[in-house]
Image (cartoon, helix red, strand yellow):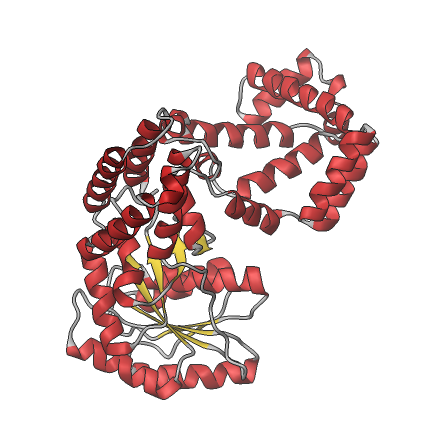
Amino acid sequence: MAFESLGDKLQGVFKKLRGKGKLSEKDIKDAMREIKLALLEADVNFKVVRDFVNVVSEKALGQEIMESLTPAQQLVKIVNDELTQMIGGETETLKFSPKPPTIIMMCGLQGAGKTTATAKLALNLRKTMDKRPLMVACDVYRPAAIKQLQVLGDQIQIPVFSLGADVNPVEIARQAVEHAIKHGNDPVILDTAGRLHIDDMLMNELILIRAEVKPTEMLLVVDAMTGQDAVNVAKAFNDRLGVTGIILSKLDGDTRGGAALSVKQVTGKPIKYASVGEKLSDLEQFHPSRMASRILGMGDVLTLIDKAQEQIDEKKARELEAKIRKQQFDLDDFLEQFRQIRKMGSISQILGMLPGIDKKMLDMVDTEENEKRMVHIEAIIQSMTQEERRKPGIIGASRKVRIAQGSGTRVQDVNQLLKQFAEMQKMMKQMSSGKQTRMLKRLRKMR
């Protein structure tokens, strides 16, 4: 994840301070010098760093922190608050037209990830808002751009409007809106052309499309891995087109990533979404406060809850609760829960959202090995008969050999799974007590 290095350095600064009962002015100035260097090394814009450090220093040297019982914690809070402001302050959502369809125009340089971001956004809006999006292939210049959007559309089962590569993009956009009105599609997401650099031809075409369809949102896709160029590109597009928001792509790369933190301050336009992985479902609404917490090692439990809610089927959750109460939780239920957790992301992604999990701990998680283990667990359960899944106690030595052969695993793997399941059943038995049942009800209300 981007910002790992920055997060490590900032957390290191606060770790030094936590051992001190009271902070001197020198302690704070030394800490601010280290924070400034960490931000600059992470590629955060120099002016943005200077303003950030000035504001934090002024607040940190005030009476509030000097007289605090836990000054190190107070300093973390100030840095967290100001970091949140720096990357956007309040969460900014997409605006929708009162008269459908809402038109969302995607723009950016070639290679920024516009076409993939178009598909990710369409999928996100269908899943989270029950929308019926239409993706539009307006990039008639890049070889295979139209085909790429159509392939992505097939993968996520979202329609793609195209008139081929020989029609003017302005006309494609106009006809796409008419098509959406006739067929009840909303929003219309235009995947426009990019160039390897900003030029008049590119800008003029985008200005003509904008004038023709009058988009509600003009979203700029910025490659988070391009360093300071990301900020320069964002400023140039905003100056010429007046973008309404930014989508950060490739935020999962092992880049310094700090330039992305500067985009809001330099352009005045909010980051609305961030792409956090390669899957088409890996697009998250951008919450500045949550991102600041992640960078400072304070976790991002709210996003983890959001991910869980997306995957939880309310009816199935009630059925599961009833089974737990009656102590009827079997391997089919185990498999169902297991699949829901897998949909939330990789183990390292999930752990990265928990507070107190530092980079060293994440590095110890062998993602590839864990993914392989997850595939094995699913294969083992699927190789069992329906009766074996309901009553694992009947699985003796010969059955274990058959299950291992059928799943392409070892008998030891089958034994390990059965042992884990037996332990889980014990826990479920405890949860069927009055106290645990009340806890389950409270958890369900939280959802």
